Image (cartoon, rainbow, N blue to C red):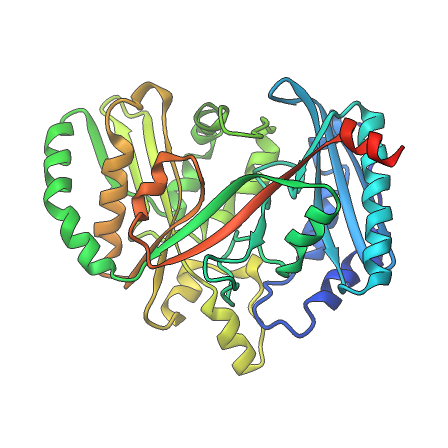
Length: 379
């Protein structure tokens, strides 16, 4: 197992200081992050990590010698935060990124992508200004959250946006569901006898984890920056804390007539209003503790359904299942929510059409930098 950087108390203090007056920040689970940077994480069997702090800023780096993107060896940066935007901190941050880039080059990396915390199973991407130039306040679980200045700071360090991602929100879910009722009925009729469509709850997800682990690898292996993970890492990322947040009323599971899982579409309530309620009531709700059973009923209207992760078994990608699941999720969600969002969809993904008529758009970015160019500039 490769050596593992030890995270200082300062590493966590920096984030707490940055968001000390921010009621919308979901917080950071220090114990969970420390477990990631420990022998309990078998990422370190092949992967390497680097982590440092400087005056008011922190940064981690990751390199997996087995990971290549577009035939380039790559490193990731993640867990990036600073406690302010003054010149002293920004100068320290520039030096910190330079040290990381030297480390990445020493590992053999040719290009950097980020923010990515270990891999794309974990948090990644950066929140950017929305199309109106601002940033909405509350953040849903799994959504990047950071000061708007971070994007500009990365560009000043020589990083460019590689991909943009979008969350598009439709504010009239009942009307959208009504539009889909007849097309959904036709699609279900056409696929009758071949596929079985059912609701997907947390218990069903957990009971099928052994089947889902190899299946999800097949479903997502062609995704940008995807890297396989061990079954233990999969359970840590997609196990019980993940499953208990699912909406059991609107998440969709499709099985082939053989019984094999053909696809799924996961839906979550937008739990972000809990942060507002917590600030008013004076008691915080940690993101790691949120569950549908305990918290969904507390959410005020209008409630937002997040259509977040849809996947189809490669053998059934020509069967029209994604469209079917999108319509079914919408119709199942309509009695329980007033709004729906296609969440965190890459700009070139056809599924962005799912909420093409959304009235609200949130924007995110994944950044990149070529190390050879960086080294030449520094020299």
